Image 1 (spheres, chains in turn red, yellow, blue):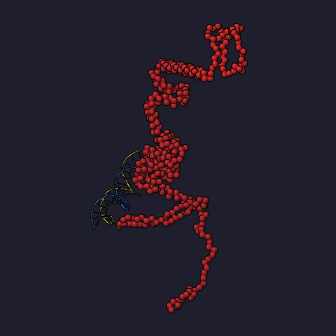
Image 2 (cartoon, rainbow, N blue to C red):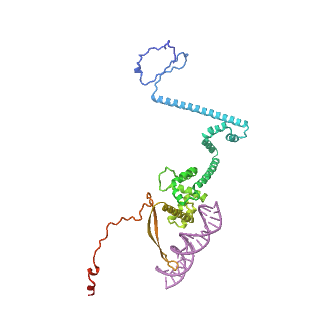
Image 3 (cartoon, chains in turn cyan, orange, brown):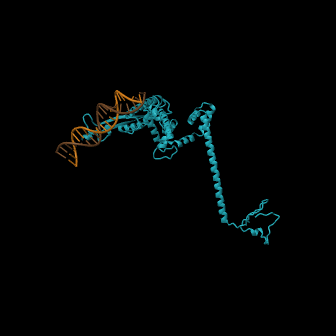
Length: 376
DNA sequence: CACAAAGAACCTGTTCAGCA
DNA sequence: TGCTGAACAGGTTCTTTGTG
């Protein structure tokens, strides 16, 4: 419906107009006039009553069409972007060939080996620093087996280097005392130092054994296990990397472990051999004896001694093998700190101030019965 | 079945040649 | 130089076998 404002349509008899309030019954009224538009022969459109259901359906249809339109636009943009990238790549490849490179790889090789400061810096900052992992991922996605093989080879080289550094860490210094090795031995320190010199190796073993430093304490001491594994690895590479094994073999000897157990643990890399354990024990004994001599020379000491008796029983006594009893004396030296030399008296007993009571009597006369009485 | 004898198997501590 | 493994001596313990 369209008509000029000055020519109202011929309406036979208008009914009384309802007020706006009366008209407001939920119906929607649409404008039907467009100023300046030519006359049309369109069929007259009449106001129609739209229910909420119809409005909802129309709204849904509109939304669907809108989404379809947006999807189409997105597809078109993506296609345009693909085309742009393809064109760009094609032009770069053409440029690479025109520049004299036989392949793209030759260009990549030249790019990374370029000595020009600006180009090298650009490659490092924009090409490797920011996107190195992404680049490796791209290669791995395109050629998984080749990427895995390369990663494995590279990792093995790293592990080799770290293993050698670990050996250096665990070789006791030349001429170091056994007692010093024992004093310095600490699993947390060992693990800290190992993480410094062999981070990948430690990480690999920790991951394999599901160990993390901040993990909850479990029944198993995984830090000890990790230290044992690292020490055993170092020992298998170099027998002299024996810091851990020295401690282990002395502990085993102190526990009375049989030689067969020494052999098993020695082959597993967790302890030195039985013979080495005895050598270390003797060396330790010499060192402590020398230390005791030094202490006695320089400061007052207290000595505690006690008798020792050990029975050695023989199951079947023979002329050459009999039961015997070993007797000896044990001694314990206790250094006295903050006591000046010669400040102690030789006798610590206090002077006697009293004496025993003495009785003045003659046993021959005053004791009963007398000799005479006995003879009678 | 109990016991004794014989011998195999094992133990510890030591020495020494060989290896890395 | 530090470490290992074999061999050895001197001993004990376990297993097998024979005997009454």
